[in-house]
Length: 381
Ligand code: UDP
Image (tube, rainbow, N blue to C red):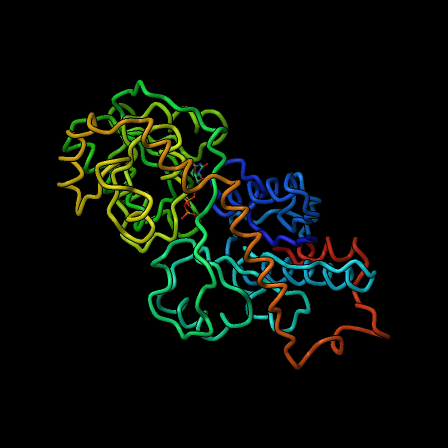
């Protein structure tokens, strides 16, 4: 198949540090190429892949994540490129969109069938968005509880979990005594609750993750005052082999989340290293963590403290197995291939805007590449 993969514009693929969606896109692109597909990846500048890489923007925008200006620029350029490929007589068979909202909202105006992976929770405004636009593409959920109630037309056609390349993570059966928490400094991810658990259980805790836009106040008031550099250590954002070693050496990974976690790559990364996960069973955590097998479901911090006393009943090898059998990238890519085939087979041919807008004489109209690349930078953003 000729597949266009649309990553978000914020962080390069693969991510040098934080970046769950980017990690998923990186693995999936490499695996699809290995399986013989012709893949073009539209992603932030600095991205590397076995797929052909096209970076619409002039620079990654990790500090300005979610700004419509950048997402629209990135997506519009990518869709222009898919139009151009069709005009050249080499159309893409399918577009796999991981990029946010713009591509899905506009999907009925795009000739190529679109598969959209839903990376966020489907509640509140997000649920309304999917109600209004979900029917325009083939939706894929990443956990089986992600879509509590949306109209039939916006239901996911499949539940496909996020992938991991298990052999890239070191299995370690000899654990050290520190607890680990890795994530965004957002209250829903619970760094402050992990600190409470560490203090009550008198265990060292290592915290790692970026402080993103809007998270300073939470970090300064709820997390930073507890950091003493001895029992409670904060490493900032981490990446590379240091990250893998931390996941492998920790005696447990803490997931004291309070939101319907769409997936939580950190859990499968810990499990791949043989590290049990102690999680509030919210969203995907209730599926990824198998109580008593690869960790424990706990209702609150008190129960998490008690579960630390039972860690020796969890076998690291079973933690890793629980990931190999469910989330290995080859399995996940196979599931996506089936969805691509179905999307191509059943691609709607909606009436409405096709080649009328933005085109002259049947050819897509676009500014020269150097102008397009400079556009956002010149806007002073
Ligand atoms: N991550 C990282 N360095 C950090 C913090 C996070 O490499 O300092 C990675 C983490 O290992 C995972 C991803 O960023 O691969 C976060 O994805 P997850 O699905 O857990 O969280 P979310 O997408 O909800 O923020």
